[in-house]
Amino acid sequence: MLIRVPLDKVGQAGDLIQLMEKIYYLSDRITNVSRDEAALTIEYGGSDEEEVVRRLDVLCASLSGRRKLPYRKVKDNRRYGEAGRARARTGASPSRERDSENSESSESSESSESAKEAHVLLEQALVKLLRSRAHAYGAALRRYPAMMPESVLQKSGYIRNFPQNVYAVGEFRHQFDTMQEIRARLEDNAPLHELLQPSGMYLQPCVCYHVYEERSGTRSGGPAGNGSGPGAAGAVSSGPKLALYSAYGPCFRHEHTSRIDDSRLREFGMFEIVYIGGAQEVRDMRLKLLEDTWLLFGQLGLEGYVETASDPFFLPEDTDRRLFQLAAESKFELRFAPGGGSASDYAVTSFNVCGDVLCKAFGITGEAEEYGDSGEAGEAGKGAPLHSGCTAFGVDRWVQALAETHGYEAGSWPQLIREHL
Image 1 (cartoon, one colour):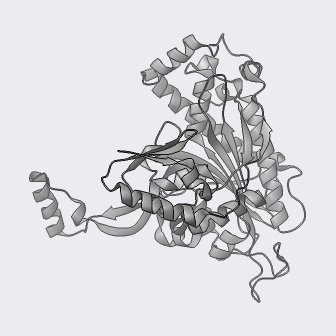
Image 2 (cartoon, helix red, strand yellow; image 1 turned 30 degrees about the horizontal axis):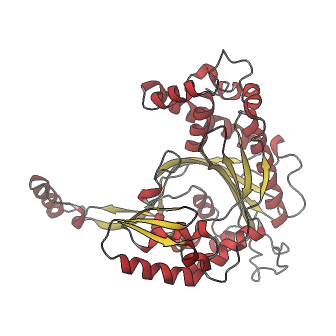
Image 3 (cartoon, one colour; image 1 turned 60 degrees about the horizontal axis):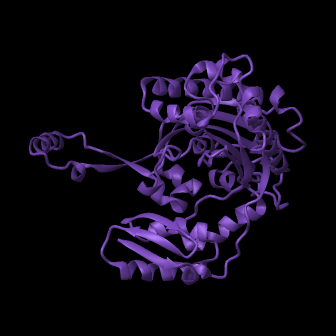
């Protein structure tokens, strides 16, 4: 069923892009939302059109009167085109040009054996490259489990803000009667989910929360990188010493079915650099990482832009938090958007400053004389909460961007990538 809603009917909601994202949560039977110059079109697999329209009216009313802040682009290299790609391939064997013939070749090779192998090699090279850069910043290297306890997701606020994204881990009891029941159901082709019980564990939606749990209840000066490596020169000012951590691992998010595509997966690899210290030190490190990553992006012959961004808070009452992120520029995204007829436009890296919110939640403090932006000290004898930031690289998206730009033959990849194979 297609539900057409005139734009003037939903105009009170303000930001149409934000509204379209939220419409999916009116019903799990909504499979797609699109718009043209006259109306929104909602593809709905149910039968109660009136209820969907009623819920949409309530949603629009809840969003009405809220400010709409524009996304601000701070960097854009799309004008360089083929010249940038050619520079990235310096020293490579003759490579394919991005023309229509090779676009068709790329599409046909997507499912080929060579394409699958290329994705593995590109992932390994990228992680190796990112680890070397993190080491240059003085970041401590970590490897964490793919599962995360519910207590961590609660303290971080993730399960409150994005409950629709989490995957809970179920488990079967270690009991004979349960095991016998499983076998009996398998023989009858009966479902097993009724025998599962909650484990209290979740698949990690990101890697960085493990860092906060590791540092939970500690003061500054813990055993971690201090940002003093050559890559971080000039990035650290006065104040609490900056502690840096880096980690790579699989992440899992229960994305809406309609949003799944090559650039939005339910399982993906994330390389993250977390930095904990004073407010100014964290902002300086975020800026340093943004500038260096932008330089790397160009060196790899990739095209796109950096803009202010916000997290996809889905409840109407959270809209002000989204506006705050945009106004305070607490989140930037580096987006791959090559142009030249390509429809690609997706974020490959995010650069976030979190204030003292996460450090306060996990009890990560500085010495007694250290203060945050508020000028308020922490509790007596505990010190003030430190500030933190995180730069997250979506490795699968970087792989996709490199493959779309340079193809699946290793000889056509940027020299910097080939050096890390």
